Length: 350
Image (cartoon, rainbow, N blue to C red):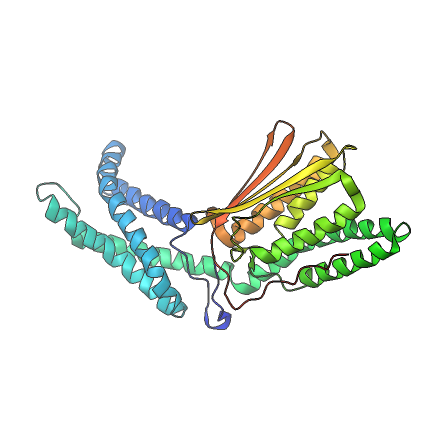
């Protein structure tokens, strides 16, 4: 969920009704309210569920129309302050169901339908309840809380990456001091990027530079044992993703898929856009190693949590074993980076 730049003037984060997670919460809340109202006014349980089924057949089309209208109203709401944006959402959420009920009454005059007046009262009550819920949820996802959670999550990644990188450099100090010097320059560039305040989403190109620099260090250490197959011709460089997502997965691919084997192995990265979704697919050889797999699950859980923090249910991470190949597939909404932003300078090569 994107945050407004003017954090101080907003008591919370505006809900994004174009996101699947937000829409599902609204649908569940409205259906729960409808079944409660049906049971409260019924003479028995069976009668209540019968009334609810009749109402639901009318509520669902009206609700879908309302969610579509809320999604279309999102650009206008985000140009306003928090209270102005929530007022837009409240007005649309209250008016659209009543308009839909009036339309149904006109199209089906002989059917027993909810009157526009009762629908307006119900939608107003639902809008008030949901406005309060999204206000409290927005406060929970406020910039200060989000930053603290992200920093805590990233702290779990940095030491692991640092130790692996230093080991790669130390392996070259005696055998090839010149290459070790260039590797330290790469490491310096990497940590200059890592030590930034990584609370915001970053362009995909920045993360790719970080990943390439890391793999350069690992290839110095592993030599011909590690090869990388890049498929990035269709990569949307300006797409926004959480920081430190691809590099830790590639690091895991080296640790779990390359290091346990003595023979050469290949890591494949396929990054592309399909419609409004960005796909990141990482494959590596699979080796049976119980101690390694425990750490892999921790890293995957870490990344899942950060994807959910930014994109709710709209982002997914799936991992699966495909014969002798282990695959991780991330899909997330395509959101463009600001055009004025410059990517992180790529690490220098020796």
